Image (tube, rainbow, N blue to C red):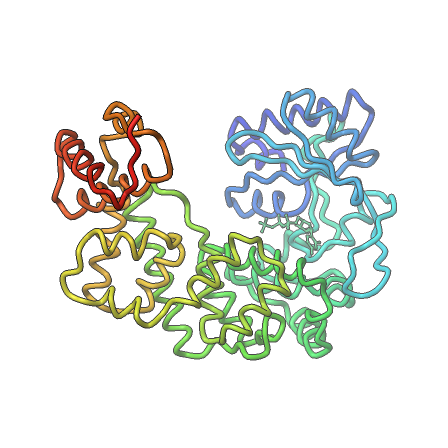
Length: 431
Ligand code: CTP
């Protein structure tokens, strides 16, 4: 495996050698494991290092984070920690462990074990390989379950018959990895997955764990692939029994996908979209609002996420009708779209195919959304206006005038303020 390690970017090689030194000086044994090893062999970039420590994982994480002078998050209940470096690079550190599942579909209780036991508790053979980064045998490859051969044969294979029962979220993980790498579920694994599905195992998982796994699936480069496979293999009852990914819904999701790509291509510097949320809203689009509220409650989405999910569902037909009209003033387009999130606007563009609406949304992103006023509170103050909530009303009015092309320069903005401040309905107060 040394040749693989040598092919890594220097920054990651340095990190691995720091980890190796930390282990050596603290008399611990450490191994790279899991997705990092899988992707290293596949030649896929992966900046999430997974390290297991034979010994005290949290202690090792503390030593490493001090050595690197970076932050650390401890998860004591699981004996794990995450060391976070800049540029999205992070190291997940675990203590080698055996797991005991108190009840099927529950979180495991952890007891100490050695490396092989730790690997044995993992989901698939391709995620159960390790590489020693200990000084004495640096680069030694440990593959107890045939993970390398399965990678070569493009197979997803569980390590034991109860894998999906112990942890049903692996049903979604199996589909995710299969579709991500264009692999195939090995026949026995496929049979076990179907059996676990017939036992409705996914519905027994704590909803938050299910939510996290669903989000990971929707964050995949092309989430339509695993969604289609879910439809084929297990259906969507684990989200809501009314959900089926109909042909019509699929056409909509394809349109959603192309609108996301459009946005990313056109506006690479804008804030990053929560694409998983856009796909989720698209997926549950056929459901009525009550079912959607039930989903939000069950999965306990964050407030901001729930807000965007419901904002889309609550759009009035009148809103779309107005946005589809000819020649609406720019200020009106702005006031319609500005309260919505980018995610919801992308969904509207994907759903309602209308030339006017598309143009207004484009104008919104391209022109209106970046429009700033030259004037500020200081200018109002200089004009002798006592600060107060009506400042916002004045700014709003000037912004509308600017969007509609009625004022352009700072002088014109100031001229308008003077006029507005004489209008009694604004309630301007003079110092
Ligand atoms: N794992 C597992 N069962 C799970 C979740 C994780 O056995 N339900 C193990 C696997 O060995 C996996 C490792 O924990 O490789 C790390 O999990 P995670 O970071 O979720 O997955 P990765 O394999 O790194 O996948 P990704 O590329 O999607 O991050």
